Length: 469
Ligand code: BES
Ligand code: MN
Ligand code: ZN
Image 1 (tube, protein in one colour):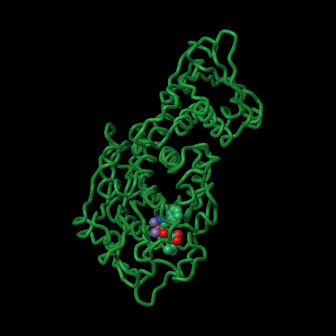
Image 2 (cartoon, protein in one colour; image 1 turned 30 degrees about the horizontal axis):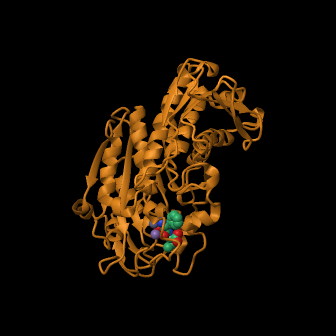
Image 3 (cartoon, helix red, strand yellow; image 1 turned 180 degrees about the horizontal axis):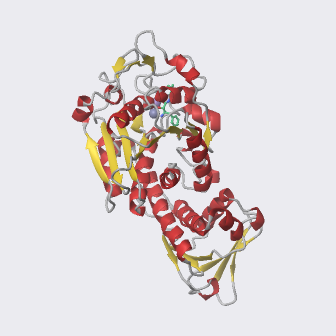
């Protein structure tokens, strides 16, 4: 779908365009009418304009695309000088308004069709035309939103791809493809390099698979040479069988998306580079397939991490924290970061705690916590805090090694905070760090008004975070 703009007003556009008329009816009230001169008008409720909020606004924008799809409208014209804007514009700025428009129209238009053998015979939405002319600020927002929307959809493509076609090595290739045409540079650390860096945790998680682990590093230098980088780490488990602690049926079928954190940092840094933000950013994706074979890591194995700390494996399904731990140590030793944010589909427990409407944030840094909450609300990638207290580390002591990778095989309580506490053992001290457990938002839910499958979170949040940090 193409997004375009015109200085014409809504009633001046060519007849092929269906014109969207926004009403103050409830958001579920809509009607397609043919006017006397043969043009189509689509009347869509947005709810009371005075009560418009960012959350409602995003859903309203997506419902425009949903409506166009269900009525098989090919060309749609909309005008954004509605009375509903003053409030949003006043609070968030015109740039935000237009960025939100572009982002959400693109996100709603997305469908994952790469593996469909036949094209649908339904008419496709070809173009949305934004009428009324855009001033400089609006134009800037609109362009920004298109970039962020595009790369969020690219993230969804990567995450939706079957594990077979998105092995660690293929994920590295996807990262290279994602940043082509930008100033970001990809370096792939292969298995030999991983072993020579003594990344024993990343190595162990990948041992059961024939496709060996990779550490994917993407550097973007948009800032001054002297400026320390912001490091974005994304979990890149390309398929999570659970390992010897095999996941049961029902918990497995979505595990090709266990690299959603990795896909998100790829999308985010590609968008940041495309936007030319004046920041230094490094994305890091520890990528491995958590598979089963006689070569796979076992429970009871004692692994030596890059940090030198040893870890007793109590459960091979707690693999995400292992690969992230080595990535955190690599960050500390080699990247001299200003701040670190990791995102990972880390625990099913985060879904139990929050349902599917918010990502969980764990950080010892109150400022980061509140920034991520506020920017989540602005971007649409909502986050909510869980505690990251030292007390939770107590469960991770081992009689056989320095730490265990979970707190007791039978203990399923507070799984997300225990995972966060494990990461905290490896996070560099005195550098602001936040962990985002994105398992709750790995896939969309029907009320998101997005295609089924990967939700592409938290690309929008990460871009905003880097921009405002
Ligand atoms: N990738 C899973 C977590 C997950 C579950 C993500 C559902 C998205 C949806 C992770 O590697 C995992 O298996 N975690 C275990 C940890 C446990 C063994 C301590 C879990 O959540 O059960
Ligand atoms: Mn797992
Ligand atoms: Zn996993």
